[in-house]
Image (cartoon, rainbow, N blue to C red; front, top):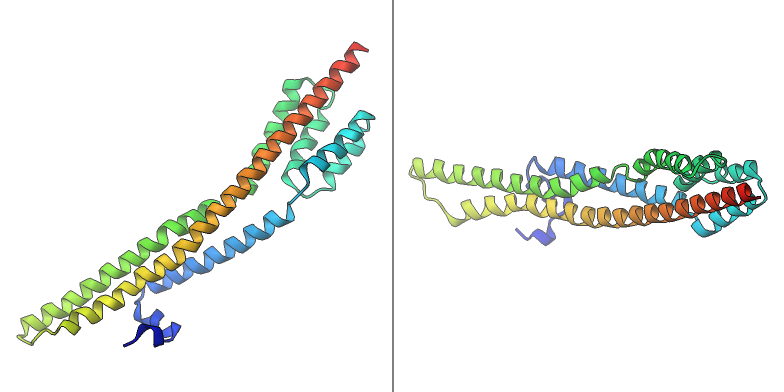
Length: 218
């Protein structure tokens, strides 16, 4: 039987029952990847432009307008900077603590479902391997039954069962490889966003501290 001439459905059925959890893994991985991609697209922001707009308001002591700018932006950095601006007249340590507390709420939202994607990438090939092992066990059972009943065992009895069993390993790898690539891509994007958030938050903290120092001297 030529594998390349078989339909996808026949190949799926030939792989055995463990093809179903592998299929479920592929659906979950695709759903998570799409949701993550759309979420990261929605929160894209010009960090420098956003910070410059806020600093421009703070230079004029327009605290409410600076907060309004944060409220108008749907991005994790807006919540962090907002927490710092609210503490504008407080000490540097209090402002820093406030922004760190906000980041503890915002950063997990960025990392949401990444662990699930990593789990799928690791579990899928294991499911494939399990399917291969159970398939080979069935193949050798057939050989044992024929040998016990003194029936001749042909190479086809062994080879036919093994190639069908190996389909689950192929399926597991087909799911795992793109899932692992997607996981690394999203981790890279999230880490980049976090680094930019930390940089912008530090710049705002330094600016507020300098402004407070200048006000006190005056």
